[in-house]
Amino acid sequence: MKYARFTLSLIAAGLLAACSSAPTTEGQGAAVEDRSGATGSGVDANRVVAVNADAKYGVANHPELTDPKNILSKRSVLFDYNSFVIKNEYRALVESHAKFLVAHPKMKMLIQGNTDERGSREYNLALGQKRADAVKKALSLLGVSEAQLESVSLGEEKPSCGDASEACWSANRRGDMLYSGEF
Amino acid sequence: MSMNLRIPSFLQSAAPACLLALASSLAQAQLAIEITGAGANRMPVAVASFEGESALPRAVTDVVRADLERSGIFKMVELGPSPMGADAPVDFGRVRSRGADAVAVGTVSPSGGRYQVQVRLHDAAKQVSLGSQAMVMSPNQYRTTGHRISDFIYEKLTGEPGVFSTRIAYVLKSGARYELQIADADGSNAQTALASREPIISPAWSPDGTRLAYVSFEAKKPVVYVHSLSTGQRNVAANFKGSNSAPAWSPDGRRLAVVLTKDGQSQLYSVNSDGSGVLRLASSSGIDTEPAWSTDGMIYFTSDRGGSPQIYRVPAGGGDAQRVTFEGSYNVSPRPSPDGKSLVYVSRNGGRFQVTMLDLASRQTQTLTDSSKDESPSFAPNGRMVLYATEVGGRGVLAAVSSDGRVKQRLSVQSGDVREPAWGPQPRN
Image (cartoon, rainbow over the protein chains, first blue to last red):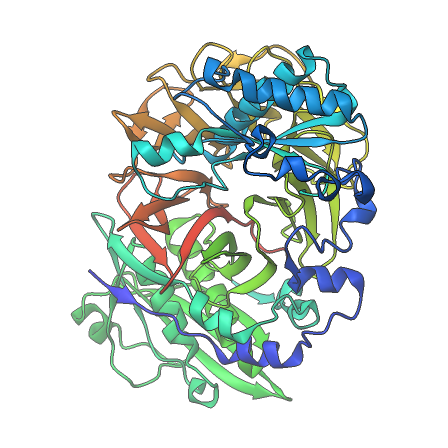
């Protein structure tokens, strides 16, 4: 067995030195800048859909959404393996959020679907979408306007739990509900 | 035969590109290659030290020998330190006594501030020249020049183009940081095109190698971007309501197949690379995803329309979808070979996810790996190797396997997970 190590070349080091890290244009900045979502400069300008609603309709004006004693502070719906059906135990939770959204038509919700880590990332992205869509459909059937809802998928990319165990995988088969101001 | 080769334009544009920002992340991100399997009958080849190459910062021939050895189809034969010039008579007796079937010799001579490199390849048994090549390089281009020489030798000896001058893209995850990186096919010269605290997946090279499409989650949802590697500028290619993912370039580089959920479940569409002109490519009542354009005008994709995820294809211009895989209950991530004759994908076999090759004419399948968490296969532009992501010791690594399953390489970094590889096209001269 051969083992070859290719060390960092002087060319790359020279290139580095030649490159200023200070962005000279918006576009060049995009090449090297940290992207956290909160500071997506250059991205927002081109967006087709603005998911961020007006701040005054955000979660900050509704303490009930983050009060641990209020059911509305619970935001996750867990799914069984290979299932996209909302279980009975989450019915009250989904109904509470539907009631809140109907009462506050300017509030928007982003529903993020998630999967466990097994298999193709892109196929899992599509499976996560089915979970987000299931939550969205339940909310719609309870009277929430389509315009308030967006369902998206994070696939296997944002696990809440990182072990390769069934306990962990089931925690990752999840739909999360985020309100304006949280996304 | 003698031909003059220009240093490719992508190199000339490398400096202004300024794709990289942080030297510290670079050193840590350096990919190391380990060869874990070689061909059965490796051809013994010698690369003599080139006359005059000691004037360069590093020997060009070191790069060539490492390239050829790594390919898994050549066995390098040592000739000792004495250089052999491109036009000097070759002592074939000595070359043969060391066991080499072919020998490369060369001369590096200063020419202005640059160097002229002349290479000649000889068949040691027949004692005839197989051809020569000349190129001009600046002193710090020894690595690129070495890869070009390796491509020349590879093509002369195998009849197929080499891929030593190509680049790969992949995502490096270290802690909570994601970096989309570009490196030479041997793992050197890693550069960061995008750094983010949110995931980046599914990088896809434009056919001319100047742009990458990918999916970034920086907006709390998957959005498809197209990123120019020479300028660092990027644009949104798909950000519709819902999820946007799985970009795949058309062979002419004008269109992107993407997966959108704007009309319901994950379905196939195509858009111009600037995001305009959205068209539906196929329709089903299930999930359609992971499109891949073949050179013969088909789009291969994953669909669960039949109950389990299987691979289908549809003519890019529209038409009926046809099922391609039938064995097993989980076949995903299809990539057609550059000649369109075979298909590589990931198949679940008894709980193991493995890279599988399907000969489209004979319908024969072959499992190419013995690992169990394989993902994201992609062909080298000459179709001889498949690059994919897998896991070793709980860490994400990249691996490459020859299309016959014999030659195996592993590419990993000292710390962090490497994933989502995509093998880039041949550089344009």
